[in-house]
Figure (cartoon, rainbow, N blue to C red):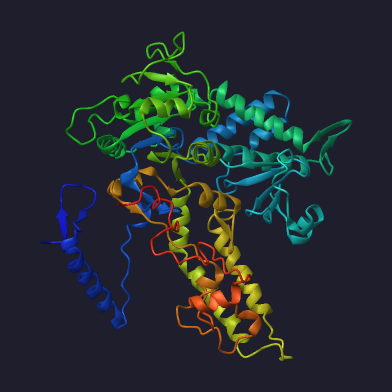
Length: 581
């Protein structure tokens, strides 16, 4: 019997089915051992990976066959807005509103520059700076307006180049894709007021004669303006008037959702209202056919078992709001609270994740929720509900492009590390020689800077040189899976095991897998070893002789713990749900 059978029915990738039984296990093992033996002749057995732009990346292992329900956000997840067109529109409308409430007319000359902002920056309302920090609050990049500050300047305002991130009154994180226009606007405003001769710069703001405006009040004005543009202004109206200009239309979307429908339930939870959601989703599913070319077209709602609008996330993941039904003809809410079971074709407003779980009959780790908002979608759904999480990071496509296209820069950094190690190779604490490493240090800084600038003025979303950003740490902590687009799930079978790679510490990633005898040449101060001993600790008589403290010889039920003979330690997020009999 063939162990691996090819199924050509899928149009996007071949499907491999492993039929492993007790009878076939030995032959399967023999085949694997043969492959491994064949790889020992000097060549290396390489793990198969999909194309980088089709990949889904894994922080915590997830077995897709355990997922019974797929949930989606809409904005920037199902409905991806074109960049930089959409950000430019939001920027222009926000500037117009600021001018209408009294800000200088000159601000109308600014044009959105997508090369400047990145997500995950922090605005300091005391000094007016945009900060890129790591997970601990160490400052990686600091910009005051368009001026990128150097180390000494940064230390004048931030001793030790460090901030207290938990001071949320002062430091505001700009984590979402919707934040990109206002991030750049903060830089524009600070730069304008700093350099315009009509204004005098102060430590915490600007003065115009007797008038003082703090960075904090400026921040609040911009936040209020952005909210006004989104909820009362013309952003949604202009978006709907020019859908082709601002919204990406993905032809594979109906196919993926229909396949998800075949193996589980699918739901949509969005903060947008019904009228806007309906027009956006109608446009996205308007292909003149159904999931496959030639199949009859279907309304967008038919792809979902449950649709919730006006969700008010992240409140939706805690106490929530009243669950009501939407009149799909008028878009208005029906009177009264919804009760009873889930009804097909009904659009709901509000509610909570608990109510939604009851309607769908699924909860916790049965649900894979897919969204772009690291706080409103990912963090809250995981921490409060225990859902599995898939973070959509559209910037990942460019990050991967730089990672692969600029590989020569990464290789040069590795070579510089080798040169540095060679200079110190034969030196120890007795050496008086001091190698001149200044040229190598300058080159490392230059190459690292060149590498950062390939991503944009603020550098990579995930790192600054060798140090990971706050955003990267949040992705690793809260997102089980992440990818540039959830469409990448189309390239994996629904039985797939997304297995997390080992997260290595420096002593693991920089030490080769060769035998090291810790007793040879090591200081006795560095030989604490839990696995071996000069005395056989399994010798019961030895234990009894040295540990019995009473002549009564009363023996405790268990004198020593026993080494586990079964698998009891948790190694992966998804391997301890149900123990196999």
